[in-house]
Image: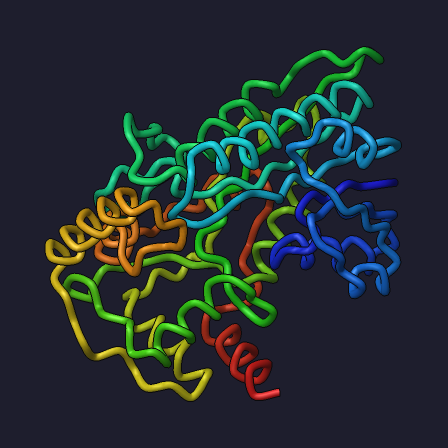
Length: 334
């Protein structure tokens, strides 16, 4: 079997490619950069942009399964850039599945597609998409997720059907993290981290190995008559913890002190509003130190009911938060 992984050079994508290659699966990784470590695993590596339709068609040739992991993440930037990467890129992946008669597509979404700025406590997949979004990333990911799920059941030219599923992993972390942890460490070392709100809001996360497990399980379960087909699933460790306790434990893995300074949720949101306005007015393209979205994310609860993923995908988190933190500390100290 040949499998395409878009964004194979990213944190999650690399974990998926590694697992597939360890099982002897023929893998093509499509990424914007060069990743010799993936070539060393025996993966075919194509350099290109998912927003380019011809590139995606070439990468998907001969594949029987696609993991669409590539995305533009972040909380700041032009809508056009997020739309091109997240919406146009996903449309190109769907078009490639249709053209090459690829029957299975596993899409990496995000819980932020249903975040309305309020607490999410035990939320399940029945939570609707909000009417408005505080930033472009969740808005464009929601458009893409809808397109993926709506494509489920389409008849392909060979008479088969396209089966799709969307996974919503929340705050992936662990050894090899090139996004969440580096940002935390950098801001902590610069003294820029502040506890936002009461600090007691419970938050779910997912360890990298568990997130990769969920994707492979989804691919195994996915078929035209699978209960997973056409659905979205929250993916977490199933261990909600106070956000700032978890952040401080992660910082301790890097031998950094806990965050003590605080700012109220209201003040953080106001600061985000002002900074966003100033950055837009001055034309700055770098990310503001605070935004409305980040203020709300840091001050509210985000933990999810993963019953559906357990039932339909057979998902069961194997690495606990405690074990994951020990692995993280060992990796950082290496």
